[in-house]
Image (cartoon, rainbow, N blue to C red; front, side):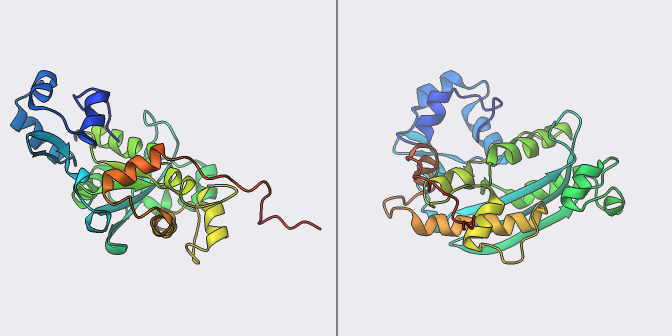
Length: 263
């Protein structure tokens, strides 16, 4: 997911993921020197490369099985970045279907309302000895690197993490992103696509504890593997997968909830 902090316009961003962008177009739109821009983007998790005279996201050429996907989930003490914060962040890094690394941390918080505590089990008391937000985000940024950012309803998690980084003085994220919910809608037949419902239907995480970050990450990981198993073999690269998750027709949902018992 590219934010407004990315200099290129929407059409150019689309071309970076598909047919490529010319040197002239790149230079016409950039405020900085090309080499400097490429270095800055790389530091923000985005790798743009030159191939046969045109510029592309490197994910245009990376096969799905060779890519690194970082499946992320956050818990927050509210939905508004202006006055709320992350209270738990978890992630697993996945390559060729296997988890190759893990990240998990509570975050010190001064306020967590009772509704959030009831939902997550996380109270202010439980975060007293947790690291500050800045320390957690610095460590997570290093963990994430230039992996593809994956989450269930990715827009919220990606935006909240990226804007939280800006609040502590870091640059926003520019990593390519993938929504596991959107991908599931196009690869898994289900009556609903809430993570808890999908887990109940497909037993993705037998030990799930909904609304705890690592538990939801593991459930999303199971869903991600199921989606990859069901997609067409013509979808081979990371950009193929991202495009499929956004553009392919959604699967038809059952008319009735199969989990509902009727007499």
